[in-house]
Image 1 (tube, rainbow, N blue to C red):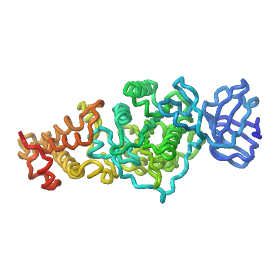
Image 2: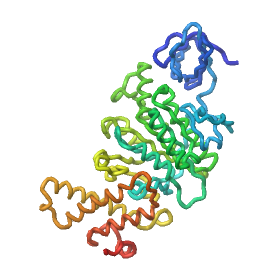
Image 3: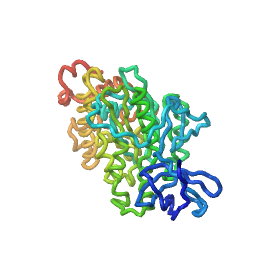
Length: 458
């Protein structure tokens, strides 16, 4: 029988201390019955002898310490999962918010997931096509990878997220593909943008959406990405689907962690974030992957806004250590009207070589990728030199590279948010741009590939 405690000792922000408890476990779910009969849920954060510190999801406002009672439910926060979740929208705690019927769960799962045994992991090596040239060709996303997007305040990461959710697909397979989308602390306007886009394009039919809004409790923000990943793991490992998880904005998640940490009076780490920020983020990001013997996979694209566009800020810094690369959005490209403003030179996908080549994309993928990187870097250098010294200081080859860089940005990177390019279209466009350069400059591509793919100059 579940025991009820009327021993609430103290309330600080979203936290509440309960005295004289027994048999309570870390992360156990609790229920608070207010003096009005209202029920609120919460979670155990800390246990010290016979005291438990709990966080209340709906906030502690209006709680009368003397007349309210706490019940410890004996299990952690859970999500009821079923295939019926696909096409539905939930709040940050997994409750339906699309006026649809309640989900009849096939089973209840702990939202903290189960740790994947490293020996059971399968290496990510299958190409996922996003339809975005600067990702597919130059910073390839691979099934089972975690590849974050580093954005800045005001940059169009929501448009990029919606485009990826709409266009992403796994090539050369008949297996089912699903998108799990988690909005973490986003504004009502952003939530409406995503929902409208998903409904208009039909992407909602293969999506599971979790929305935690900016005015929802910070505590709920901590649970939202775990809810999304639990749904993704169920669809991937139990139903054999390829699942892409898009989480935006991880910065809001980290701010909620900092808020809870301050309320707990913990010793702060860098910039006031808790010292366990790295391990906490790792518990989320490491839930991506493939498992040997199972057909499904979980691929993650976490999106975060870098405060003051600072890549050394703790959130992007620690995220970069845990994940396999990063896609960086550039404020300069954004100001130039490039959509999406992906800065390809500092962006990186550490697994790109595993998901490309014959049978996956095309034999010329790696060679053209290296050549485009090299030519764009030289072209940017030439443009910078021209700004300082004038065009007359450039050699004829430098002028060609500067022209290449200009066209690369306006024709290749600047594809807009509605264009869905296949990898073959992207590769052909890359060759078209490389045809601007003299053949002698194509030092990273073998002669037989140049003969086969390079278009003749008109």
